[in-house]
Image (tube, rainbow, N blue to C red):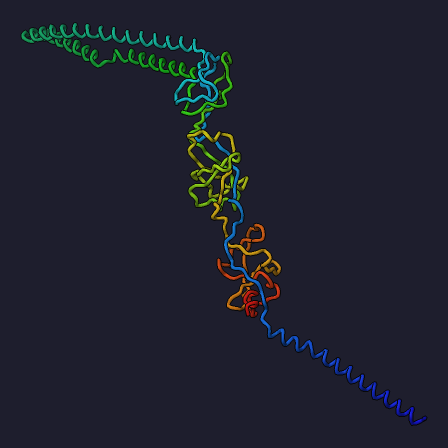
Length: 403
């Protein structure tokens, strides 16, 4: 019995030793397995998905609202005060430069003009009469001088010196009178009166003309709100004339928007009520420096409006970019790797991962614009890029399936 118990104890110890040995072997195998697996992973090539960098649209052309105005827009002020006698044009009428629009009552101005004209006529008649008198006096003086010359010759033939001197003095006096008559000094006062009278007539004509309000330029009458019988003061703006055959389109741009338009000679515009009809307008001005208050850049376009489709005061959309300009190099947004404030993409370059810094722009759908750092056609890793490091061996998923 004693020996049987010893044999059983020995068998139990042997069994425990066997179990312990198996446990050690199992533990050794489990710890060795990961090392073997790691060796296999290091030897494997990472499988990724790629997509060629290509151009994608970032949307419709970028636009700016602009206001339409006539290329010529002039106020029509009154030059005189008075009551409106006649209204010759209506709002919306087409006028030519110098055409009458309003006639003021001008009775007093007409009387002033008649007075000035009467004064001028009287001064001219006085001058005519003075010239006739001078002509008559001149003829008399010439005859007198001829007689005095004869007397002087006769006196000179004698010995009486007193008689000779008297004859000479009379002749010289007559010649001096003729010279004074011929120099016109006697008519200068009358001529001055005529000049003053003519100036008064001209002033009366100007005053009379101011009672007729005319168009300062050819175009269309707008903002016309007067009627017959109204009394208006000098300087009152009674209407506006606009040349709607040539239209200006004006707006202000932010600095980024101004850069989009800078260097272009023309831009496309359209009316939001009819967006399918697009036309081009010439760029006549784009400010090189911003407005000191608004920090905006003034933009002015001009275009023909012979068909009258654009109305002053309306608004249009100006396209600062074209459809072609909106097609830019872009990559899937999910392919972008971000590290702090920096952005990268992973490229597949001959089976090797290449880390490339990029500058990003707008997003449209699943794609984001790449402004700098990437060329069209380069192969971008779009799946698995977050596990890659620069220089790591990689294989495209399609190539891996074929192998």
